[in-house]
Length: 97
Length: 440
View 1: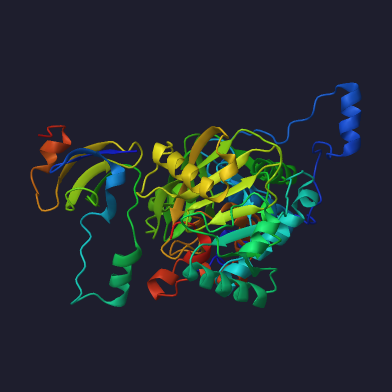
View 2: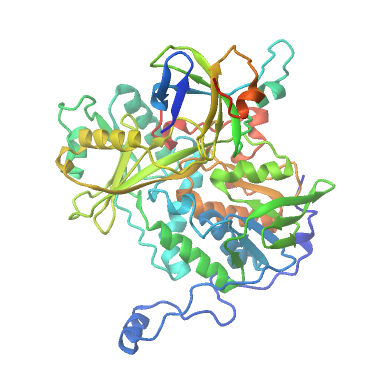
């Protein structure tokens, strides 16, 4: 069980959210050859450590969020709206507003 | 990259016959031995030895679970390769091999999958004799319930593929299900009534710890070394070939490394820069207090995301689908317990007062197509036996046998040829989702 501090709705149980995958994967349909496309589709970083990822608040504000989470402890450092690029380095130090 | 040029092909092989033990191993287990030690109160000998880590091995296997231990055993028993180290950062069988729900079956969806898992069932049938270890394999029958027309259609599809491969598997109706398992609610009371089931009589359960210990004991007798509490910190390569392994207990030189780490597979493959199409999810399971034996078969329901079997001790063992987000954390959650309890009571209402004794989680390295990843990689000598998702334990023996053959001969055996890493780049996926999980 993870508590996710939604910027719109406040702290909510992760069961309200849908995990939407690693953040920052970019696809370029105009230039991708089959090998690039399949790397985009299948290859995952899947690290044991801090990851930046997307969540969708299905049973809440129904908006996409970006969060940094540790995959070993499920600790969450910060949660932001998907389009808020913000000062991530400041937030990583624990200065979460 | 072929393994054929690896230095391993020059290693002198001992002429070890399958099953023949070398040196002074502990006495074979037998009924007479139990009686004799019962009378004399003599201690049992240790099942396997502890070793100092040596500087060099012919083969290093990372992960002392059922896959790693089986690979070490078949390397020694079938191919005479005994200069083998099995490394584990924790204790033997402490990962998925000791956390699964011990269900064995071969009623998969693709011909490649059915052939592969059925070889495992055959090896499991003879395992107690081969290893001289009682693995308590009980082929009590396996029922995959269908609650919707769509799942009934998939069951019929699976049954036809199974029959073509010579597997005992058929679709039966709800009344027949009720005759096999008396306590199952086959009425139209539940929200999702049972419409039928895929019945697979050779399926069953096994004692997973005994399988791990049996393989470890037999591999140890034949000369392989098992190193627990030995974490791999890095893998050395030169000119695209594996040359050695750095561990928490010292460095080893070796031409062959086999990655058998399942949930942690990505962290090992990252050491040699082999990118994996894996996502690690926790999978939770739970066990109840023991009661009189009443459940004669393994019950699986994909629609209700639950499976249940009763051990020989009388405990009910429950499993579910993987947790809905990637994680390496093995903590249980209340959502799991609530969901499993409510779903299982839909199927078997009469167990509502049973108490859950404990719950736990194991790690599953899920692949995009729900089939494993086995074989060679772009790094020479670095072999994969990963991608075991929610179906790794039942494949232990056949994977060990096939990986041992790959290491010894340098050729990918036919039975695992479809499961190579390159299939993702080439678009040759082996879709097993309809038969491998309850999470769809």
